[in-house]
Length: 340
Image (cartoon, rainbow, N blue to C red):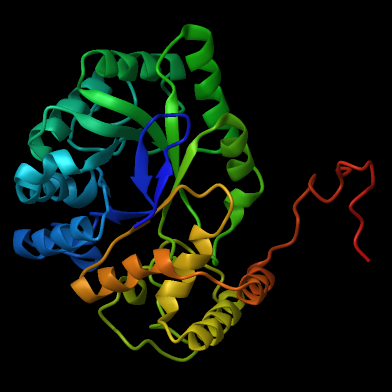
């Protein structure tokens, strides 16, 4: 396993992280489609990941309505010390009007709920799951800062924020001397490269770690799908179109992945993950799995070194047009980036 420093912190995280979203929810759609794994299956995946050197496991309170955290708490047991445990808050977790969001009230309640379900006295990385337009960022940060000072949280992070939203939080942390986000968790794949315009450059400029979720685009880049059919009707992507992809554009990406995979004599998922790992600014890639063989394939991506030709072909087939104002701004040499 390889490890990367987590942003401006002094800790190192494995370049492949285990996503626990497949744990729990066997009787609760849509989680039954996502995974629905019981304690035994979850324990096998956790053991396989830890044996491979993974030290970051990511979950969220909303996954399987809290059952995911409960299962993870049970199966970790004495191995808790070997893990950097990350979870998230924001989504509705009850029927009350305040059982969601990023208010001080809900941050405090949500944290206590996660600690209880995970059977731990602290969260290593506590992340907001989205942006709350109703709650001042200063209120959220003050509550998270209190949690850090109380020893219930080690580091804080954010998921699914626009660059301007992240900068708003970082500015408030600086001006109010409050705990600062150490990381961002974002969607990134060959099928979805939106973060390259503003979010990745912002993270590099602000020294934030970037943790990637759904690097296989919800299974679309797993090699199970082609233009005509799927080889696995139980796959999540076969029934849930998330994250959304432009299929007409992405079939060419799948074709290219197959060609590169054939050159290296490896599976398609390994190539798709290796491409994300090779991107500048990516700290760790979060991968989930339903079966041990899936996780084994994903873990092997950290050792796959793609050639310049491989990267060039994958970059070209997945490229998207430069948005405004990118195509209009001058480059460092003072030239307009006009294309012939």
